[in-house]
Length: 228
Image (tube, rainbow, N blue to C red; front, top):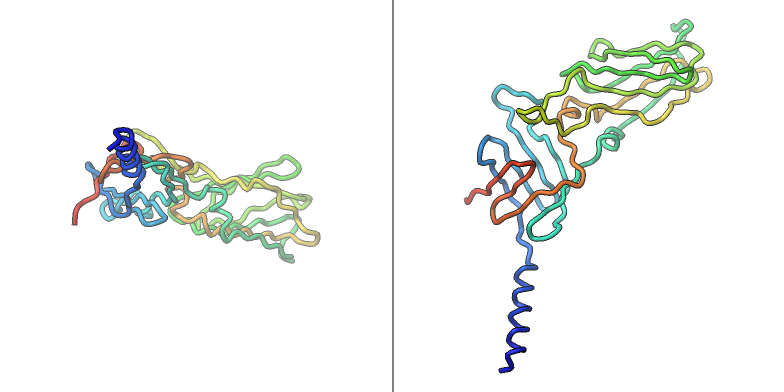
């Protein structure tokens, strides 16, 4: 048989073997610690159980989609904070006859674990601050205010690593001015996505995790898939 033909066949077999991508779905356990990575057909989850002395309000600190780049690497992406915050976002305006010479802005945010600082900026270059809690949700603006924007940040952030690294959102910016309608003096802003876990989650964009056999390495952490 022609030696060139044999070499070509071997080369093709090697190429097909390298091109095969292993199904990586399953649960991977960190070699040191109790955290796990769970991979389904379309999603990548990073989970830190909070059963003992919980630091966070949720076990699932990262929710990502993943894409195989090659047999050794996957690219991870999660919904970005400002996009996530728009889920269920609603602004409504009404008239309140009990208000005297003021415009009231009311926030409805299901974040009750930590104090939130809300800074409101008006069209007249004034700023007002609300320390948002379950008992403090309203802020008064001057009656001549025509529009405003706002920025929300937690009182403090819990680092994601013992050496102080944090991989989440440090705040939420409205990125737009809200016009106050004529004959309206009470604006209600609902942001249901800003729950207790919003400022606790990892937000991942274009990161890579290495796949090697039954092992996944991500952010310097090594996880191994256990045999059943």
